[in-house]
Length: 157
Length: 109
Image (cartoon, rainbow over all chains, first blue to last red; front, top):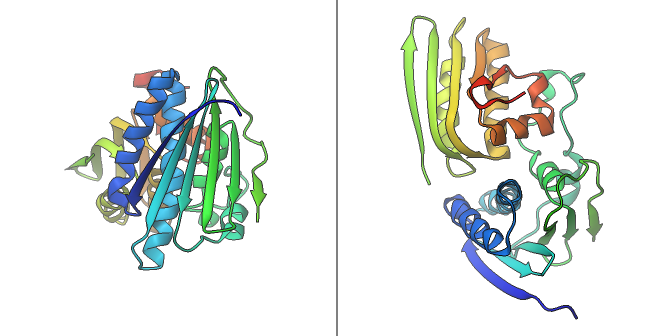
């Protein structure tokens, strides 16, 4: 098995701490040597994943936790965001993603729903596992620049 | 991380200078500041994002609801001085097609 370092953090699933997780992510990504642009992408992707969890925690009115795991490899960073409470509705989330099309009337614009789309656009690989709660696993490779926005999100149910 | 919002009104134009990071924690505050302004008929609401260093989909959500409100209330929404990183989010999501964006200061497209 290829060697890697692993860092795990647990936060209350509250909006208050998303910026803290974002700062930690920037610190780790900087340590690995990601470019400024990549670090900004990572910050957004991780925030979106946590935001999904937090939004759900609020809906259920229960105080959950979000666990973030960073797998630090020589050529990439893997970030795992797990909500260990209930699970958010995957179908609903995946059904609502995608860029805005100019032909849609403004009334149909989604106020939420860009989260998973952005994660997919900003990371190199995105996997979602919803066996026990929901785990979003995101990978970003060192030194890769752009990845197409139409890459598939793979799902394990 | 906090968000500062400074609103100045001049006749039928309101300018909101926003500074800080827009995320799930600060977005409600932004929405509270901007939405009532867009409900005034004929109002031009200009949001200055020059000092916004971070924004994610929660910020996009605020601007989408503000834009909807302008259509319902016959007002106008304009976002100015977007940093490249923030502008990029509008471009990726296609929202640049329907929002009035002006990012000349930071050399955006």
